[in-house]
Image (tube, rainbow, N blue to C red; front, side, top):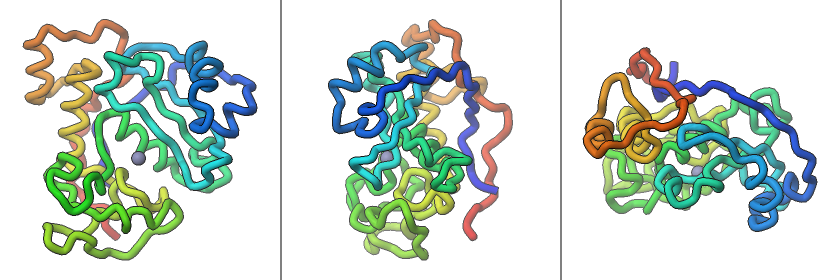
Length: 231
Ligand SMILES: [Zn+2]
């Protein structure tokens, strides 16, 4: 059993838009995409994920990209995730959907585990060992054996973490520190209301922030599994 974040999302709506150039190129046509796809389609509030499925034909290794929660207050329209359509479960890449989980991690405020390489504070999470981006750039097709690309720092590379680059099958876990960070970020920037308050949510409440919309993200009552997913 893997380690998961205690969040669930409910599918609210699916729309289909025929816009071939946007589907094929996505990130290379940002201004066109913004005008023709995002502006008319974007819906919901700060706790609603807008997910756009595209092909990224010009960048075959790209699986997706996401906005960060702290961008929301200044850029509502661009809040959301673009994901390679066939990386979803049942898609022709045969993956388990881990790429979308990775993007949701960004959307909730997580950096890559190889953020800033072998220097602190890396990804700003204490329990994800530092990782050299050169090693992380092994790509999304492989699941490497364990190694340590930052030998002067604690821990082996977190090759099974959702927030590194590896094959979808290889990425199976968030750490407790990442879960704490994404809940804190979500409470602060997306006004997520937690049943078990974190420091961040208490601060958000103290600052008078409330969730003004119907939240579609809810905190699951199940505790985070402490079972290791390492093979
Ligand atoms: Zn990423």
